[in-house]
Amino acid sequence: MTYRSDPVECQEILARLEELVSYESPSRDKIALDRLGARLAAMLGSAGGLVEVVPNSQGGDHLIARFPFPGSDAIRPALVLGHFDTVWPHGTLARLPFRLEDDGRAYGPGIYDMKAGLAIFLHCMENARIHPPPRPVWALLTSDEEIGSPTSRSLIEELARQCAFALVLEPPLADGGLKTARKGVGRFRLDVAGKAAHAGVAPQEGRSAIVELAHQILRIQDFQDPGAGTTTNVGVIQGGTTTNVVPASASADIDVRVATAAEALRIESALRAILPATEGTRVTVSGGFNRPPMERSPAIASLFEQARRIAEKLGLPLTEGSTGGGSDGNFTAALGLPTLDGLGARGAGAHADNEHIVVESLGERARLLAALLNELKVES
Image (cartoon, rainbow, N blue to C red):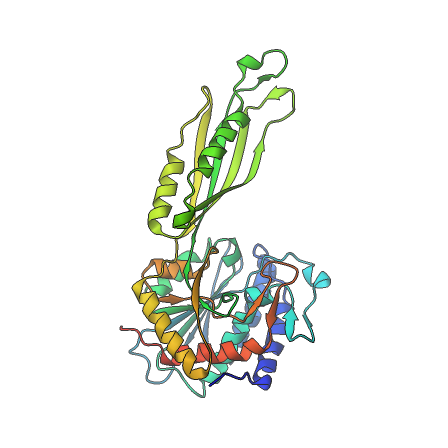
């Protein structure tokens, strides 16, 4: 059997998606986020959810929607994770408005990452009133995922500890596959203090912070282990004042990606242990990992195998894979909660001007998500 998407169902989801895209929602704009959050709360309520708005003075409020179904009280809930913030600044819609092309793709800022996932979930919950899942469904929609989930992490972890498994509405792999592993993400800063001096009159009296930083950058690159999936990237450097002054200060911002918790510990320990290579300079490392790695545990592997068989019954081939980017699924997986990521619509161009989704995949992914909520089994 091969799955054939229902055009009417796709159009219903697309209409809601177009509305969601019409709300610009940059991660650091509380007013805009709360405006979209209020609309989402109304949609969740109309779909049968008991909605709780979680106040957030540091950004947009978060939303929890609990969907109780008859006879499911004794079973631990399924947790569905999504976010409604985007990387796109105000004014992007004027330049990149929502549009539907003849090739069956729909374009717009945030459409792929991840407002399509939200529209798919809302559609599933509306239909769940007719065909209710055997367990409660809890949904957490957050406002700060794109900036590392600084205010929502504790909330994600609190809910995760009460649930049976987690499904994440992020975009899938290129072939529609689910993400069963993600790298952990670290953000570190290296500050170097040197000593200023006149570069022409008394350079020997100075201690160049920039020279010291150059030594450290090469050292940090050596911390990488591509075979283990570990990368370090010095992405931003700053230093000095003018060309005729030996620079007294310099800094570097470092991105670290790791596939395992063991590698996270190794890299962080190595960064904290850095010592100056230049006499008379001082080196300070700050920051840390804001997302632990999502490792493909036996529990995740088992949950995916169930999902693959469920998708096969729908006529959908389903693959799995890993990615270097992080998501809120990293937090749930690190707690030991079986987690499947990448349940959003197929498409491409996340964070880029060509961001788009494949319209026919909206119905396909809605059917898949509904089937998973109905059929996945995890021991309580």
